[in-house]
Length: 273
Image (cartoon, rainbow, N blue to C red):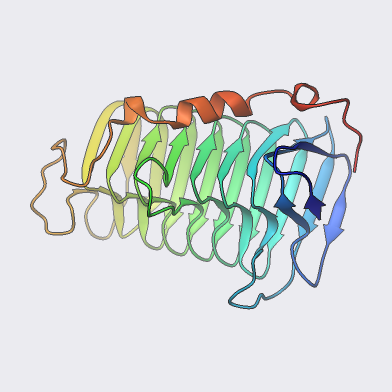
């Protein structure tokens, strides 16, 4: 458990770590400002958590952080979220690099305020959503942004889900979903990447959808592309009433830039936990 001062920047270096906690999260951050998990070069790491949690449990993921959480490095990390979520942050979750294999009973990767993926190889298998952000009381949060990486997402519900916007600007993404392939409550923008939805009810769904680049293929049992607010009255590319910001002016850019620091730059010389 990490319980650091509220302004602390904490680095956890995983180098051949194996953590299995039958009573709760494998890694739990209760207090800190920013936390980085760095996967040591060539390392293989694995974490798993409890099989169940109480409904009011404050931490309910194999890796759970109340602070901003950044994952980087060239090692590998296998996460088994047996009781609920795989990797979850109550603030921002950023993946810069690494090989992540995440299996979860609920969501595989979730940043409540935001989820940003800039690189890495990610395999996410979820009983609910594979990639998610669900902050619903702040128009500037609750978004997912993907600029790179090799992502394979398999979900019983949505492959990617956000309560505000989803912006995909790079990477290779393959999604097999029981619900929507990609679902944003407000704006979905695809400006790059190779995106393939191989299974879904609705392939791409948002109040406002714009595709300006990349390669997109969709297999769906219902609508392949559904741009509406739920009433069926919105046309693709129209500005929906719920849209409160343009994706190009969103606040995630400063957070992503702040998260790209190397572990050593985030504080004094780190030592392995």
